[in-house]
Image 1 (spheres, rainbow, N blue to C red):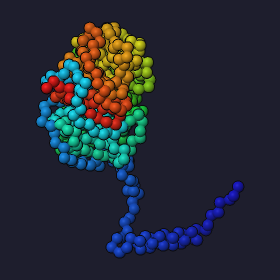
Image 2: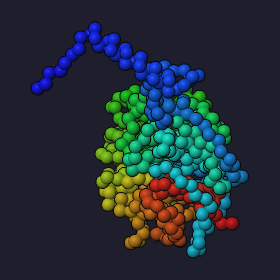
Image 3: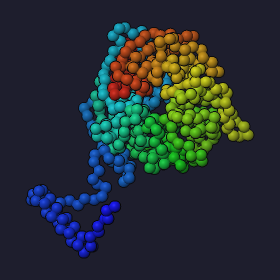
Image 4: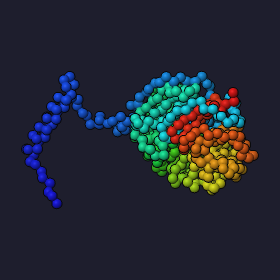
Length: 469
């Protein structure tokens, strides 16, 4: 083996200084007069889009860009994931068409979006979507016009995100005072919904010890009683409440078992005189007090080994319905009060062949549960877990989304085929269908406001006219 040669210290240092001096002189000559050299400080030479969390929260370094889009003069709203009440049911006042002609539903506008499945929120004629700019390596919360899709403003901040079955998965929550959204790597941004100006921002990984889920964050923020409710799944913060106006922490829930964040979202619930938040962590389910975040109950009866995606469904009366893919099936829990404590007990379990929704949370309607199970069929269950009906052969929906409004289900399949289904427990009744997207993986949650249905596939978002005018 060749031996390494070490020069004498007295010879190395002068030589090194000479090289540095010559390099500095060459650089000065190349720059020309009037262009002084600038000192390079470690950490300042990161390119655009580089992660800055080691020096601070990247959200706080975000930039606002305004464009020429104008909000629509339309009153309808879909203000968060799954609508007004997080139940997948639209509160439409505008009547909807119950049949479609060959050219319907008509496309009103369309835009390109970064790869992902992030759905839209709508309020006061504005559409909000969490996007990702791969070229600039930036998360981008975009505000668009509901009238024509033109961009009103966008707020961006630097964060590198690699492709992993798309990047974005979350839906913003918007009120008259704020819009709050979570990016793929668990950055939370709160902006003025009209101007786009930054109110506050959080980095759940660095501030609360969150672990980014395997396919990036799918959690949609909950705004409730003046607070933003999040589930970091960090060492000392299983759940977290911050003041909606300021971002100041109000309370945090301890995490005694070290449970981590999933793709599921927090759901509010009332039972036994208590308002609580129910969350599916990676190794169990917890219910915490809306007042102070204390743990009211917990159970390990429901957990999914690979990915927990659907959120809890609250049928009422203390019941909680859970479902998932990867052979998880479904479970109905019943909350009870015993000796002043809440206890969660299993009412029934369903095998995945009966019902197990891989991606989207089911919808409760007229004491029945509707959703897409693992074989892609749209299914109706009663509250005892009995399958009442399933869609016909050839009427599969893959991992597609759905919502309910005006007695109608809008159900999308993977390839962008949209079907209109009557909302009845009697039988599966197909009223119409149309190919509204031409891409793939049309999995993004739907949004409906003032007769305008917003759908998306992996790279394109489209607004459709489904109203009866």
